[in-house]
Image 1 (cartoon, rainbow, N blue to C red):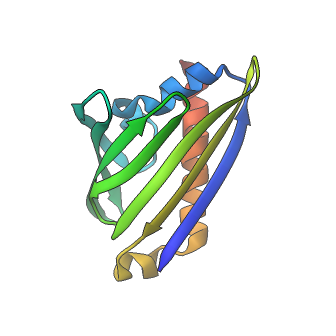
Image 2 (cartoon, rainbow, N blue to C red):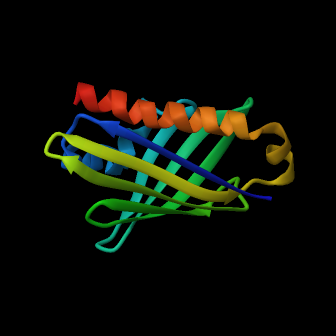
Length: 141
């Protein structure tokens, strides 16, 4: 079963600062819940390959993704990992000089066992925590 998520938040920060924070893949482990390790494996002009290591539900998961960065978006596609497929996108937009809109949307399919263990409200809560973690990290940068 394909699932879709969408979240948006407005923050009082410069859009370049917001984009740089989200694009800094190697810092994810320092603030994403359950993320034990984040490594940038490969960096090309057109894309980056990163790997996240999570411990969720008493099990370790590795997610390797291809991330395509443009001026104000980061497109994410799982290369290896627990999802049957995962495609997502961060979008960062100027509202005005000191206000930025952060949007995240994704489409994914979990294997049957994980699908049954993770209802939509748990996934929605995790995504809210994730976006709030990015925002909290912005204030400390």
